[in-house]
Image (cartoon, rainbow, N blue to C red; front, side):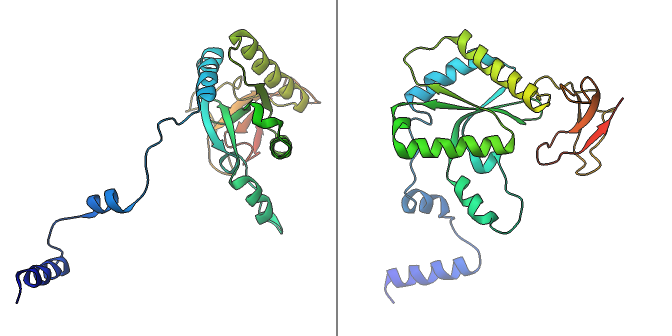
Length: 224
């Protein structure tokens, strides 16, 4: 028997017994075509990300290139699959979240020249409508060479405040977490609950417990 045949038989026998060198790492290197991108963010996105960091500081968590699928969900019903397909491949440039609960607070889109195309305008209109339906405000910022950090900070604060006033909701950024030992668990999903105060309506000024999983869970407990 030739040497190559004996080596092949021996290798097969050792593999059958679970003995031998693991070549998976070598296979991953040679068989899969993936390569690491040089830039996760485009130069324009990176520049604006730095502006956002200075504008919001530690008040919000900044998340980049977030899929709509990870932010929104569609209740199971007839025709829900078609609505899921519409958000599965779309993303928003930046998502500001409460740093404690990671609940989304504001979507931010950086609009460059491509947003002037008709297809992009149709896409933007759909994203705006989808986020509005879910109760998440969105800020569109025209791409520029330079930005005023103060203006960006003001626009973010104004939009979030106006949205909270219009909807009667208290945004997570101003919700006050109490000691975890005294905060009740949500009776519906068992998540921790946040202490909030109603901004308007017949319950304006009243405090209540709200589930941290909002809007997935809308359970509340009255305090006073």
